[in-house]
Length: 239
Image 1 (cartoon, one colour):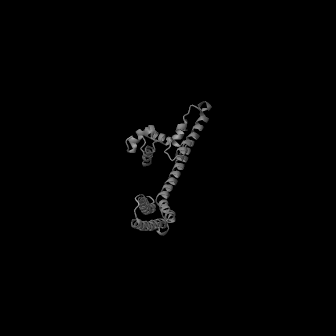
Image 2 (tube, rainbow, N blue to C red):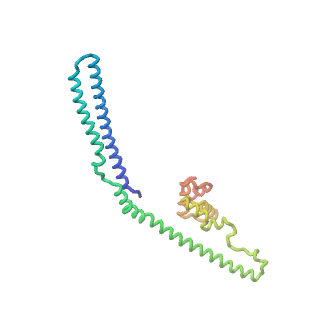
Image 3 (tube, rainbow, N blue to C red):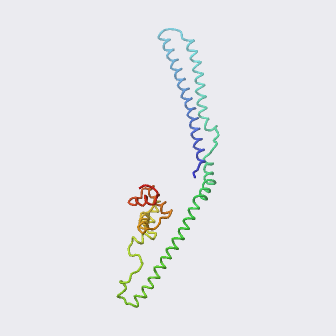
């Protein structure tokens, strides 16, 4: 989708510029002709003095040509100067602005922005739902673990395994981190998202269409870096 209406204004500007240039060329041509006639008149006049001859008829003829050339020059200038005010524009800047505000942007919003926002809200709900599920699952095991510790004694607190994140990288891979938000603020695929995709590949998880789109997007943005192997494997593009 693109704002095609602007092409009408651009085409009009090109046409008007071309017409104005032609009018300017006519002015310059009339100027050159007038200057040439005046120069010829002065030459004939000088030669008549130096040669001591009567050049009245020749000078009168040149004077008539000069007067005609002056009229032509004045007319050409008038044509050029009146062009902008007389020629009606088929498309105005206000019409372009109205078409943008009243036609293009509403259609763009309906066809592209709104579906994207709907996807965002769906993804947000699914993320929060999955996050709360994870919290509940971890907390359930932690509650059972505390019960076992109560029976075994404090000496077993650090001997019993749990499923909490023990490293920052685990949290960054699975949660929305500051690094994720920073990358998104730059309109780039965040590096921790690529790290997450690498983790999925290592775990043998299948890549979703969204995962593959992220890889291709990172390729276009030049941020794929050391994850280019994933692109060749999952993105359908040679690294």
